[in-house]
Image (tube, rainbow, N blue to C red; front, side, top):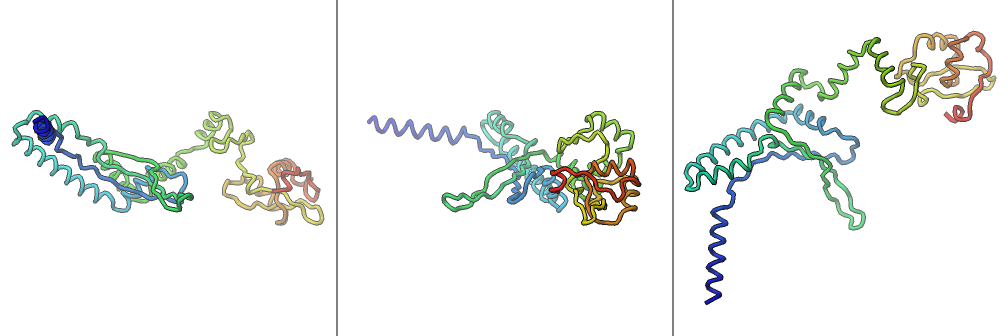
Length: 260
Protein backbone atom coordinates (compact mmCIF):
# COMPACT_ATOMS: atom_id res chain seq x y z
CA UNK A 1 0.00 0.00 0.00
CA UNK A 2 2.80 2.41 0.90
CA UNK A 3 4.46 1.72 -2.45
CA UNK A 4 1.30 2.72 -4.35
CA UNK A 5 1.00 5.94 -2.35
CA UNK A 6 4.65 6.74 -3.09
CA UNK A 7 4.13 6.10 -6.82
CA UNK A 8 1.06 8.37 -6.83
CA UNK A 9 3.03 11.16 -5.12
CA UNK A 10 5.89 10.80 -7.63
CA UNK A 11 3.42 10.85 -10.54
CA UNK A 12 1.76 14.02 -9.20
CA UNK A 13 5.19 15.70 -8.84
CA UNK A 14 6.10 14.78 -12.42
CA UNK A 15 2.79 16.13 -13.76
CA UNK A 16 3.17 19.38 -11.78
CA UNK A 17 6.74 19.77 -13.05
CA UNK A 18 5.63 19.31 -16.67
CA UNK A 19 2.84 21.87 -16.19
CA UNK A 20 4.78 24.48 -14.23
CA UNK A 21 8.17 24.26 -15.97
CA UNK A 22 9.16 27.05 -18.34
CA UNK A 23 8.29 25.93 -21.89
CA UNK A 24 10.05 28.89 -23.52
CA UNK A 25 13.66 28.72 -24.73
CA UNK A 26 15.22 31.92 -25.99
CA UNK A 27 16.70 31.54 -29.52
CA UNK A 28 20.29 32.78 -29.22
CA UNK A 29 22.54 33.23 -32.25
CA UNK A 30 25.99 31.65 -31.84
CA UNK A 31 28.96 32.33 -34.10
CA UNK A 32 32.27 30.54 -33.48
CA UNK A 33 35.58 31.91 -34.77
CA UNK A 34 38.69 29.73 -34.72
CA UNK A 35 41.75 31.82 -33.74
CA UNK A 36 44.24 28.95 -33.56
CA UNK A 37 47.75 30.23 -34.32
CA UNK A 38 46.80 33.88 -33.86
CA UNK A 39 48.01 36.20 -31.11
CA UNK A 40 46.55 39.39 -29.60
CA UNK A 41 43.21 38.90 -31.34
CA UNK A 42 40.81 41.82 -30.93
CA UNK A 43 37.26 40.47 -30.71
CA UNK A 44 35.85 43.74 -32.10
CA UNK A 45 37.98 43.28 -35.22
CA UNK A 46 36.61 39.75 -35.61
CA UNK A 47 33.06 41.11 -35.42
CA UNK A 48 33.82 43.71 -38.08
CA UNK A 49 35.42 41.10 -40.35
CA UNK A 50 32.32 38.93 -39.98
CA UNK A 51 30.05 41.86 -40.88
CA UNK A 52 32.28 42.94 -43.78
CA UNK A 53 32.06 39.44 -45.27
CA UNK A 54 28.25 39.71 -45.50
CA UNK A 55 27.50 38.30 -42.07
CA UNK A 56 24.77 40.84 -41.34
CA UNK A 57 22.47 38.92 -43.70
CA UNK A 58 22.58 36.01 -41.24
CA UNK A 59 21.87 38.45 -38.41
CA UNK A 60 18.76 39.76 -40.19
CA UNK A 61 17.51 36.24 -40.91
CA UNK A 62 17.89 35.29 -37.26
CA UNK A 63 16.21 38.50 -36.11
CA UNK A 64 13.16 37.55 -38.19
CA UNK A 65 13.16 34.14 -36.46
CA UNK A 66 13.23 35.87 -33.06
CA UNK A 67 10.28 38.09 -34.04
CA UNK A 68 8.26 35.06 -35.23
CA UNK A 69 9.17 33.16 -32.06
CA UNK A 70 7.87 36.00 -29.90
CA UNK A 71 4.57 36.03 -31.82
CA UNK A 72 4.15 32.27 -31.34
CA UNK A 73 4.91 32.58 -27.63
CA UNK A 74 2.37 35.40 -27.24
CA UNK A 75 -0.32 33.27 -28.91
CA UNK A 76 0.56 30.34 -26.65
CA UNK A 77 0.31 32.56 -23.54
CA UNK A 78 -3.11 33.91 -24.59
CA UNK A 79 -4.45 30.36 -25.01
CA UNK A 80 -3.01 29.13 -21.71
CA UNK A 81 -5.09 28.69 -18.54
CA UNK A 82 -2.13 29.97 -16.48
CA UNK A 83 -1.85 33.13 -18.58
CA UNK A 84 -0.28 35.35 -15.91
CA UNK A 85 2.16 32.64 -14.82
CA UNK A 86 3.24 31.89 -18.42
CA UNK A 87 3.70 35.57 -19.17
CA UNK A 88 6.02 35.89 -16.17
CA UNK A 89 8.04 32.90 -17.40
CA UNK A 90 8.26 34.40 -20.88
CA UNK A 91 9.45 37.80 -19.61
CA UNK A 92 12.02 36.09 -17.39
CA UNK A 93 13.89 34.45 -20.26
CA UNK A 94 13.85 37.46 -22.61
CA UNK A 95 17.45 38.52 -23.27
CA UNK A 96 17.38 40.82 -26.29
CA UNK A 97 20.54 42.66 -25.22
CA UNK A 98 22.59 39.43 -25.56
CA UNK A 99 20.85 37.69 -28.46
CA UNK A 100 23.93 37.52 -30.69
CA UNK A 101 26.93 35.70 -29.27
CA UNK A 102 30.40 35.66 -30.81
CA UNK A 103 32.80 33.11 -29.33
CA UNK A 104 36.54 32.93 -30.03
CA UNK A 105 37.89 29.39 -29.70
CA UNK A 106 41.41 28.04 -29.94
CA UNK A 107 42.33 24.44 -30.74
CA UNK A 108 44.77 23.10 -28.15
CA UNK A 109 46.62 19.78 -28.42
CA UNK A 110 46.73 17.82 -25.17
CA UNK A 111 50.21 16.31 -25.11
CA UNK A 112 49.40 13.73 -22.46
CA UNK A 113 46.66 11.97 -24.43
CA UNK A 114 47.51 13.42 -27.87
CA UNK A 115 44.07 14.75 -28.73
CA UNK A 116 42.84 18.18 -29.79
CA UNK A 117 40.38 20.20 -27.76
CA UNK A 118 38.66 23.51 -28.47
CA UNK A 119 39.13 26.03 -25.66
CA UNK A 120 36.97 29.14 -25.33
CA UNK A 121 39.20 32.24 -25.28
CA UNK A 122 36.65 35.05 -25.09
CA UNK A 123 32.97 35.74 -25.64
CA UNK A 124 31.10 38.81 -26.86
CA UNK A 125 27.36 39.42 -26.94
CA UNK A 126 25.18 42.22 -28.31
CA UNK A 127 21.67 43.18 -29.32
CA UNK A 128 20.39 43.53 -32.87
CA UNK A 129 20.41 47.34 -32.53
CA UNK A 130 24.12 47.33 -31.58
CA UNK A 131 25.07 45.22 -34.59
CA UNK A 132 22.84 47.30 -36.88
CA UNK A 133 24.65 50.47 -35.78
CA UNK A 134 28.02 48.79 -36.37
CA UNK A 135 26.87 47.59 -39.78
CA UNK A 136 25.84 51.13 -40.76
CA UNK A 137 29.25 52.48 -39.72
CA UNK A 138 31.03 49.84 -41.81
CA UNK A 139 28.73 50.55 -44.75
CA UNK A 140 29.56 54.27 -44.53
CA UNK A 141 33.25 53.44 -45.13
CA UNK A 142 32.31 50.94 -47.87
CA UNK A 143 33.55 47.97 -45.78
CA UNK A 144 37.10 49.18 -46.43
CA UNK A 145 38.50 47.83 -43.15
CA UNK A 146 37.57 47.30 -39.52
CA UNK A 147 36.36 50.28 -37.50
CA UNK A 148 39.48 50.13 -35.33
CA UNK A 149 41.78 50.37 -38.36
CA UNK A 150 39.68 53.18 -39.84
CA UNK A 151 39.79 55.27 -36.64
CA UNK A 152 43.55 54.73 -36.38
CA UNK A 153 43.99 56.14 -39.90
CA UNK A 154 41.85 59.16 -39.04
CA UNK A 155 43.74 59.78 -35.80
CA UNK A 156 47.02 59.99 -37.74
CA UNK A 157 45.47 62.64 -40.02
CA UNK A 158 44.22 64.64 -37.03
CA UNK A 159 47.62 64.58 -35.30
CA UNK A 160 48.81 68.11 -36.13
CA UNK A 161 52.32 69.29 -35.09
CA UNK A 162 50.79 71.37 -32.28
CA UNK A 163 48.77 68.43 -30.95
CA UNK A 164 51.77 66.13 -31.36
CA UNK A 165 53.82 68.44 -29.12
CA UNK A 166 51.08 68.36 -26.47
CA UNK A 167 51.07 64.55 -26.56
CA UNK A 168 54.86 64.47 -26.12
CA UNK A 169 54.67 66.71 -23.06
CA UNK A 170 51.75 64.76 -21.65
CA UNK A 171 53.59 61.42 -22.00
CA UNK A 172 56.90 62.91 -20.81
CA UNK A 173 58.60 62.02 -24.13
CA UNK A 174 58.09 58.32 -23.36
CA UNK A 175 56.75 55.73 -25.81
CA UNK A 176 53.49 54.29 -24.44
CA UNK A 177 54.15 50.94 -26.17
CA UNK A 178 57.80 50.09 -25.44
CA UNK A 179 58.44 52.53 -22.57
CA UNK A 180 61.49 54.09 -24.27
CA UNK A 181 62.38 57.61 -23.10
CA UNK A 182 63.10 59.91 -26.09
CA UNK A 183 63.78 63.48 -24.92
CA UNK A 184 65.58 64.25 -28.22
CA UNK A 185 62.16 64.02 -29.98
CA UNK A 186 63.72 62.12 -32.91
CA UNK A 187 62.15 58.70 -33.29
CA UNK A 188 64.92 56.37 -34.46
CA UNK A 189 64.90 52.68 -33.73
CA UNK A 190 68.02 50.76 -32.70
CA UNK A 191 66.57 47.85 -34.65
CA UNK A 192 67.17 49.77 -37.85
CA UNK A 193 70.32 51.74 -36.93
CA UNK A 194 73.51 49.94 -35.88
CA UNK A 195 77.31 50.37 -35.99
CA UNK A 196 79.95 48.83 -38.23
CA UNK A 197 83.34 50.12 -39.41
CA UNK A 198 84.99 49.59 -42.79
CA UNK A 199 88.63 48.58 -43.38
CA UNK A 200 89.90 52.20 -43.51
CA UNK A 201 88.05 53.10 -40.29
CA UNK A 202 86.04 55.67 -42.22
CA UNK A 203 82.61 56.68 -41.01
CA UNK A 204 80.09 55.67 -43.69
CA UNK A 205 76.35 55.92 -43.15
CA UNK A 206 73.54 53.55 -44.03
CA UNK A 207 69.99 53.66 -42.73
CA UNK A 208 68.37 50.26 -43.21
CA UNK A 209 64.74 51.26 -42.75
CA UNK A 210 63.22 54.73 -43.00
CA UNK A 211 59.77 53.73 -41.69
CA UNK A 212 60.23 55.76 -38.51
CA UNK A 213 61.02 58.94 -40.48
CA UNK A 214 64.52 60.44 -40.62
CA UNK A 215 64.59 64.23 -40.61
CA UNK A 216 66.13 66.34 -43.39
CA UNK A 217 69.27 67.16 -41.40
CA UNK A 218 70.25 63.50 -41.18
CA UNK A 219 69.48 62.94 -44.86
CA UNK A 220 71.80 65.80 -45.83
CA UNK A 221 74.57 64.19 -43.78
CA UNK A 222 73.94 60.88 -45.53
CA UNK A 223 74.36 62.50 -48.94
CA UNK A 224 77.97 63.47 -48.08
CA UNK A 225 79.06 59.92 -47.34
CA UNK A 226 79.03 56.73 -49.44
CA UNK A 227 76.92 53.81 -48.32
CA UNK A 228 78.74 51.49 -45.98
CA UNK A 229 78.56 51.10 -42.25
CA UNK A 230 75.55 51.62 -40.07
CA UNK A 231 75.57 54.38 -37.49
CA UNK A 232 74.27 54.53 -33.92
CA UNK A 233 71.86 57.28 -32.94
CA UNK A 234 74.55 59.05 -30.84
CA UNK A 235 76.90 59.19 -33.81
CA UNK A 236 74.10 60.54 -35.99
CA UNK A 237 73.67 63.41 -33.54
CA UNK A 238 77.43 64.11 -33.67
CA UNK A 239 77.33 64.25 -37.47
CA UNK A 240 74.33 66.57 -37.34
CA UNK A 241 76.24 68.93 -35.03
CA UNK A 242 79.47 68.97 -37.09
CA UNK A 243 79.19 66.75 -40.18
CA UNK A 244 82.24 68.19 -42.01
CA UNK A 245 84.79 67.66 -39.20
CA UNK A 246 83.48 64.17 -38.44
CA UNK A 247 83.93 63.00 -42.00
CA UNK A 248 86.69 60.46 -42.39
CA UNK A 249 87.29 60.18 -38.63
CA UNK A 250 86.84 57.06 -36.63
CA UNK A 251 83.92 57.35 -34.25
CA UNK A 252 83.76 55.86 -30.79
CA UNK A 253 81.31 53.02 -30.50
CA UNK A 254 80.12 51.03 -27.53
CA UNK A 255 80.21 47.24 -27.31
CA UNK A 256 76.43 47.14 -27.44
CA UNK A 257 76.46 49.16 -30.68
CA UNK A 258 79.04 46.90 -32.30
CA UNK A 259 76.84 43.88 -31.69
CA UNK A 260 74.05 45.52 -33.71
